[in-house]
Image (cartoon, rainbow, N blue to C red; front, side, top):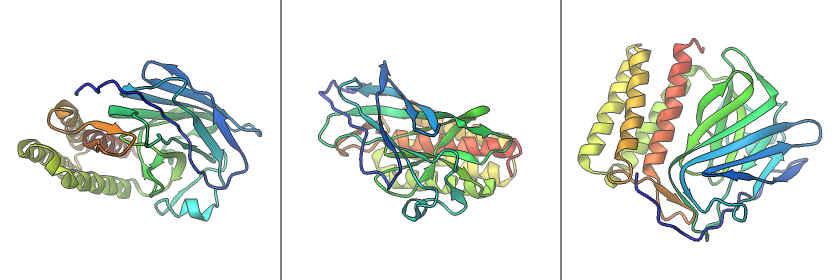
Length: 277
């Protein structure tokens, strides 16, 4: 992964939110490449959020503001951006918005890890709860890479940011896996011109192998193949696969996109292997 040149930066994590009964502006804390904050609404809805960047520039107390809001689970404008059979849990209808200022020099390489931890939700066996993200007001997509037992701690990785929600997804796991394979294939196909032909061919073969293993019912092999795909993207990042994102949108973090999609696909394959319906 290449090093990002030092830049004067500003990051504002705020934008227009859906109509909400309560909106809070948070006070982030910083430690290296980590941003953390606590969310608390009247009525007892609470959470802790964390964003950990692999490599970031300009992450400091003068550069960041974080906004969260309570939203209505029946907000038709918001719900229309979800896949079918996905809904907002009534016990935690919290939307977090993270928006860099386009004029700033903020940039990061690789992926970030985003997590929300709340005691308002309880994780059960085969829980439908997932971490979803939307970029620039588009459709919400499942980015889950971890879901810890007890009170819910939902985590995921990404290559860009905007809105985040914990949602209940009751779609069949096989349908989710198929959609994630399709999304990863689409992203790889759309970005082959950004990498050497040999690298693109290798990644395509790895992805095709993973899908073949899945189709044959060999979940452990499919999981290993997807993990290998992600590892290979990381290994090729910088020199052969673009891996830097910046606030003004002039760069496409291809490596971060492919890794994030592969990582959430691996999560769903693992869930299937562990008995998720």
